[in-house]
Image 1 (cartoon, one colour):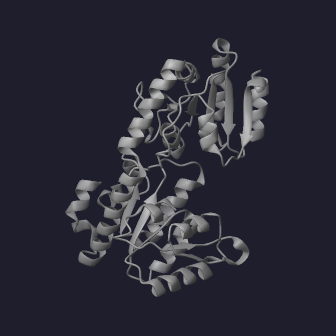
Image 2 (cartoon, rainbow, N blue to C red):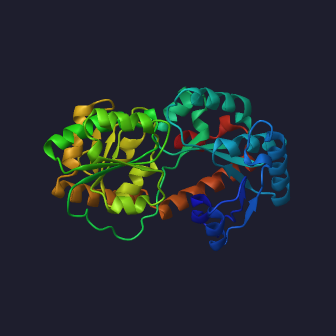
Image 3 (spheres, helix red, strand yellow):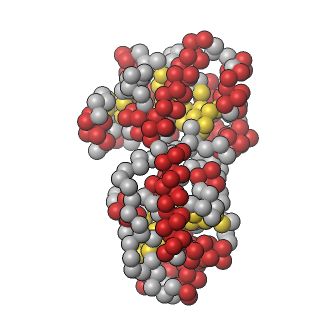
Length: 359
């Protein structure tokens, strides 16, 4: 959605190919972006549907004759790469991973070993991620270019609301997101601010265990499990600060970018590409993963009225200067153009000196 609507339309004419219909289709149509929906048999792209999906994607590529293709999510990436095996088309593959949990890293390494030859260039979303992509996944560094994630700025945010402080954790309820540590740290917050509240926006396999943990910690009355929500901007406006307590797997999380754009102080573990986004002590606080005491102290700082306002204003300024959609759209437009030209002028990645400087 963001790519199709943010790229410079005087340079590139986007066309979206989707594997199922959804609400974004109307938004894309309103933006003047044509959409083709391939209704996958059974509604799910699995091994059985892969040949059909790949063939249909290939047929659409032949029909549209694009100068470049790019895809999002492994369900699209796999059949797209299968379709490109027999076609010479510039292909930009985005990588949003930094570290892995369980089988995901094995799957990604296997995907690149088997189909990486179809990729013209890889787009990374933070600079720190490049080392993971090269050392763990095995992608040559000269084939990677970094374009950090961005968000829409929206209207000028209001300061945090008066009243009891609210700490919002917008993250899927998975073990790697560190909610258990956030609950333990929040118990320390309540010792100093018994009126504080912790809101967990998201759902996932850890929900039941986390609800039990809140009860065992004696903080259930101050913790709200909001479930899957589609109104995060409203939740941010009603909050004092945003917290992300991930223990390992983060790249350049939109949750923190959205909080900073909303003028909210952020508290996060110092993992992945987060330090490229959050200036410790300026736009928020960074703490080591698995350090409940440090997380408690950072939460308490973030809900101090003066600090919440100061960090929130600084965060908004940083997003405006560095991570706005207009700037991102220009960089993506340039990346598309370089990637397309590269296929035409030089099919051999090893001789592209420009890429060496971008990695």
